[in-house]
Each structure stands twice: as structure tokens, then as C-alpha cells.
Length: 257
Image (cartoon, rainbow, N blue to C red; front, side, top):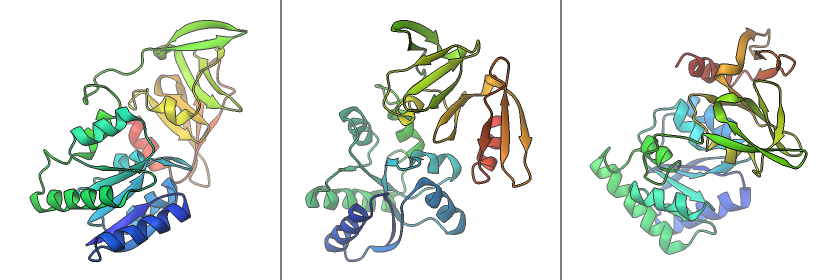
């Protein structure tokens, strides 16, 4: 059985590989990738492995994005320090998780469960898309996303409808900017956390520092280096967003949904 490890901490990846070899010598680690970008490149160039061990929070994004771009059918065992709510969602969907630091017995159980899934090839017991949805809502099948955010401006809190938000950006703090050009601080630690609360059909993670609303986009221009430049509507037209060459195909696909 071939397995891929997706983990941005080299020491953790090394220890995980050693533990896997101890638990099941029949598993061959065919690669270790340390970032979302590297993982996307890896899957673009290789056939999918039999099994994936994936951290959730990577240095340049969340590993769930891999499944947005590649239709993978192999089991995935997530290694995470996620909250209890997410852990419960994993169990409901029939896929185990490994809470860092990885426990040997838990690893053994997770691998055994993955083998059962591979033998049955049952979509009903293993569905990565369903897993991603379950992480976004207490029922496991989220039909709605966050409707309002509280914005802080000059120590005053203002509820802002999500439909009125043009983009979120990260400076030293996280900010949201409305379609009217109003700028508010939002009380979240990371853009990753905000991203999980938004409808992915409406908001796109353009880069590490920006989430943009599709309804705030005025036009998209191609650049000579295969990058894309996104121009927002007035009054936010001065905020240009560049989409990298690697992200450009996925961004175009998102615009066409």
C-alpha cells in the first residue's frame, strides 16, 4: 500500500512516517509534501496514492482545497489539532483522525479503518466532500453559512451582512471592507477561520492575505506571466488582487460556477 504524507512540520512528518512503518510495515511512504502549493503540484503530476495522511492547517492554506481541485477516491486520515466539533464530524463520516501528538494506538485504529474502506470502496462510508461540509455545520450537512459579521470601527460594533462585504484582508489584523468602502476590524485570528464560515461559491481565497466576494468583482485581466489581475467595483477599485499562475485555472473555474 502506498501512502502520501501532507504535513508542513518536517519533524512531525518524520515522526509520523516512522510510526506508520512501525504500525504497518506494508505501507510505503511514497512522498512527503509540506505545503498546499506543493501538494497541488504533486497531485497534478502523480497518480493518487492508496492512502493519504493530511494535516489540515498548512502554512499556505487548508488541505481541504486539494479536494476542490482533484477528484480523489482514496481514504484520507487527517492529522489535526482541530476543535472538538471538527473531530466529531470526522467520526460521523466514518473516517478517523489523528490528534497531535499522534498516539500509536489511534494510528493503528485509523489505518485499520482505512483498509476496511479500501476493501469495501463504499462511498456511503467515505465521502471527502461530505466530510468537508460536515466541518461547516453542527448537523453535518450545512445548508447555510454565516449571515452577518460584527465589525469594529472606532470601538463601535456594527453588524454587517455578508452580501455587503466586498473582501476580507489580512494586515496586522483581519479587516473586512464593504461594497460601500467601509473598513472594519473583525475579531478572528486568521483568514482561514473566516474562510470556513463563508460560502465557497461566493468567496474565494485569492491569496494568503485576501478573500474576495464574487459579486464585488468588476473584471479580471490576464497578465503576461499567466497571472490574473482582479479589479473590484467602485469604490474598491483601488484594491487590486493578483491571482498566481498556479491558482489561475481554479479561479477561472470558480468564476464559471
